[in-house]
Image (cartoon, rainbow, N blue to C red):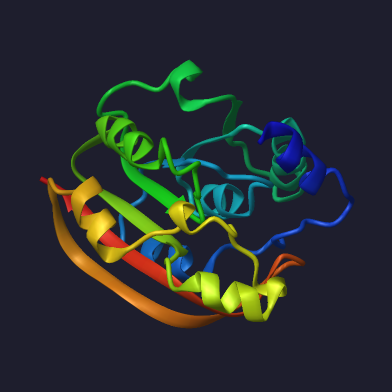
Length: 203
């Protein structure tokens, strides 16, 4: 997977654009500034945006090329982010470190995705928030019609409302819905797709 994503990001363009995800932007505007973690952050558009708002930003991805572009974007916006490269198990986060975890199109391999959610939960303090947007299992049909909308082709990497409830069972659900949206994010997220959106507060 590292080679796959390094290949995706080893181009001059920012393949998901430089602007933040709309849902993340909408939700961050509601919260007091604090410490935020962005898993699978790619080229850094969401991390850099959060940093411009004053958040203390940590991010990680398996792609070195993604980190390089994220740091370039951060420099262009005159902000700093802590960006680590590697699998979650090898990284140096601590329990209760963050006020918010933002999982924005963080599609992990099917065999570890729920495990990763459980591990990431430990890094979030009690009362902290998860902000989540990713493709739903129904998205496989939209991807088959129009590949420009992006997303995994393996349905087991996609999400259902039931999975989110299970993975984040110790959360107060503030918002949880499956929704058809139109994406316009760089080169690789363009068109109509089905997503799960979730905001939860850790009990």
